[in-house]
Length: 86
Image (tube, rainbow, N blue to C red):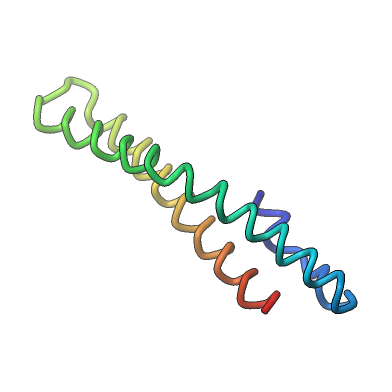
C-alpha cells in the first residue's frame, strides 16, 4: 500500500484520470478507516496486558508500538496523496 501512496501518477494525468484516481483514493481511505478500530483494539489489549503484569509485556509493547508507527505512517502517506490529488 505504501508504494501506491507514493506514486506520482497524477503528475501527467488528464483531468478525468485525476478524478478517477481521486475516486480510487477515496475508496482506499474508506477501507483504511474500517481498520482503525482494529488498531485501537490492539493498543487496548496491549495496555490491558501491561496492567495484568503479563510476563511478555515488553514483546507485546514492542509489537504494538511498531503497528502504531506503521499505522501513523500510512495515515500520513494517505493524507499527502489526497492533498496531491486535490
